[in-house]
Image (tube, rainbow, N blue to C red; front, side):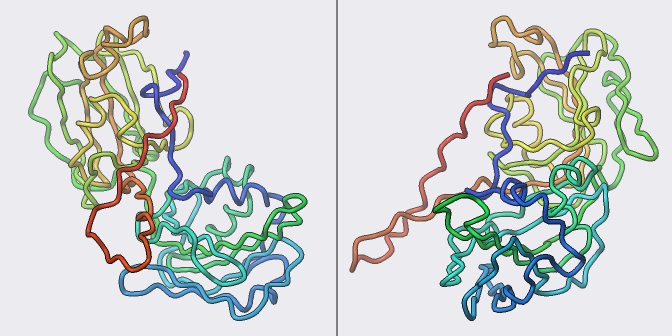
Length: 341
């Protein structure tokens, strides 16, 4: 069965930083760390991380970092929950000038990046997998990559991570009684939590329907947030599945500014940990997409909301010397590039 490659013409998972966590460590896939680090551990001893009361990371580099190989070091052990395969780890990242310790980019104050631990991650990026799997929530880890490893003239790179939280890769909350008998029934696999949507009966609703099935107690999804979800989608007309993150074996992440209106409207205001049944009429789906195979279809989704974070905000523009803060809010970030279907 063919899969619709995206929920919209702009389905693209946005990394919270200019240098994404997974992308950066992918370059070091050959350097699997030992439980407390890898490479030249002593060379990373000058590095320390503190997080101030406002949640801003402050990194100290007390001396030159002289490592000539890719290295990682656990700066602080975590005292929270274990991170295991099948979990979603929420990771805060700071990109640091290795000479001065200045933090040049960070998501501590904007929202942690969700990383799904599975065999695919382990095979493609064992450094990241081991860094998470071998530590607990609260752990702080430094990661250094000499510029020589990335080509002539490349600068050294230093990143510091903190495991902020760990969550299951399925909805986890209180079941909600569904009283609308016109909606298709949903059953869950007892072990995995994967939903099965019964073939819809009767006429499809003309308006958007949002029916919580499980109510979580996490953060509310805001307008334009970047969400991480598990979902299954079927057509109302015949009950045939046309897309599913469960079938692909891992959650999906994307900004709500880049999905069909039914998704954006249906998920806003819902809480992390919830599972929601969304019935999307063509007017809020692909109705205006001439030639799309789902143009005339009413779509039924069951969505597990695993994580949400606000869209990344750009740093305020520098002000001329001598001028005070005007109090203006930062400009809205530009839309992410379109992804072809």
